[in-house]
Length: 275
Image 1 (tube, rainbow, N blue to C red):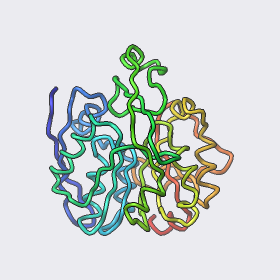
Image 2 (tube, rainbow, N blue to C red):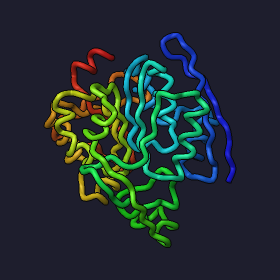
Image 3 (cartoon, helix red, strand yellow):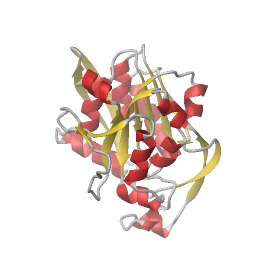
């Protein structure tokens, strides 16, 4: 196990924020993030610029599928001690790294919830991805051609499950500025069970991973994902890597990609307000 520290500065609203991390280079996703940062590249720039655009001091954010906390740390700096963050991550291997990164940044306003967000409260099972520390899922990752170790030794673990509504109620959260959802194809399960939350506009912006192969493994298509939010008054937008105005995806149109990417669900008036 090789752990490498990395820190960098982001200026937001005329204030410098010093982000600090410790990455395990033996883990695929952590090593990918570190390699990206070492090359002076922006990791998932469309998300980073979205966070910078919409989050303000005092806001509340959710990070569902938080991994080791890259975006939780970013958001924690942007919302400040006056704000609040709830980060959800199911895997014990990531919990320690997440908590260490949160501690490095001196946060006590970002809380880790151990488990998953899904369509019911109770107990569930999650597959451990032995090939990718950011790829644990509700479907067997060994069925993907890339995941040889997972295929050779399929492993499931028990995990606590709760709905998004339950998470918000238990934390007495009335308004969320930004929710990031990256759950390896389980996004439809989460959003379909969150209609009451979405219909009252309790979440302003949802940054959601679109992973066609993971959706298919769960029995879904991107249409199912979009239908969940459009039924509640949200539109689908494609965020830009330079942080410029997101592109509206018209109803009936779909993104032709075999790779994972991010989409944003929000309302036109909020796009007009923040851009």
